[in-house]
Length: 274
Image 1: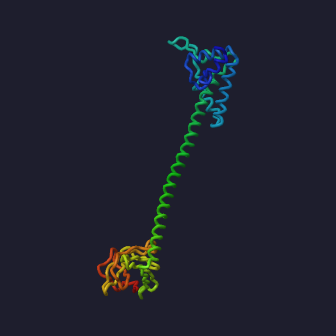
Image 2 (image 1 turned 90 degrees about the horizontal axis):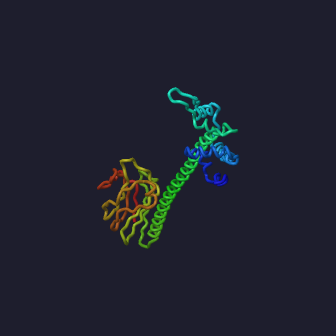
Image 3 (image 1 turned 180 degrees about the vertical axis):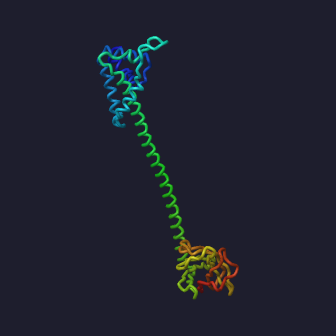
């Protein structure tokens, strides 16, 4: 294998990243000592990774550098009692003419690891933001679909009500406020064909929580329950009440919540005749 093939084998990149085994490391150091082009390639790969690390991280302080070197390159004695000669592999295989290169390679590997972590965090955060954005868009889409469905149903109801109001069978009964509530107003739409009753509140104050309004159909002089309702936004559109047989008039009283079997005449607030 010539030097070009050796350089293109990928062993230099793995060496700088700290992924070569002992045999590959030893062989690369020997090759770099023999061939300047291999040593130059090692430095080039190192510079690329260092540049990447500098782009995504802060430079360490001098104290941090010293601490890192002391961890990576502790002083190893030439002789230790009971163990014979102990020389580190790094010290034994320094590249001639560039004694600090091996240290630089290890530092580059450490910096490359930091750069890799920084990139992972960067892209993970990007992914998280994208995922959150998709969730938000999906939620907004669901909410919009719900609003559209509600509005579509509301439009359909209004259309039906308009058709009903314009029907030839509909009788419009205006209810006026009594002496106790003269400003009150409402309209009853009575379908003489189907006997259906619809109430539209024009102006009526809200009741206490324990109270409700109750509509009465006056038939043959007797009040008949036509349903209870609250003075709210719903009643200001058109509310379907209980059907009634040939009423002569309609009246509204204020009763306890849930309604009453008979009207409280002192609490009558609206009345109107057909």
